[in-house]
Image (cartoon, rainbow, N blue to C red; front, top):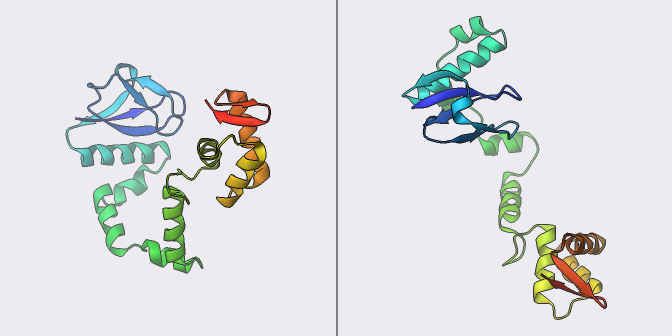
Length: 178
């Protein structure tokens, strides 16, 4: 069972699968958590595609485009047409003046991190420095971070933040992760 439900804060409409089974649902737009029993169900359908079509109709009506919506194809048909006749990722990127292989490589680097064992975020690089260096000073952490693409001054700022948060401690110029 699929239900089209709406957020009381931002007015977003979304599909909720098994609306009666879950106790809470989170709005995908604003992030507010709602009790599912209190959410307004605009439409309930057994079929996901039918629920998607009903949501699209509600959005068109809300925008004052009901007549135009009535003339368009079903949502599933439009999606199939787009997949068959639309512009692919590579074609789109190259048409925008970007090298698709470089974009893909950058995405892989961002998702995997630049170093083995590191998640790749700047604060994680600083945490790694605290784990891997023996009695690290702020200079040691900055040097470690610079070798991994994080500016030394930024690494020092992050080290201060970790200390303020209580995730790291400093004693006589030496830091350690708590």
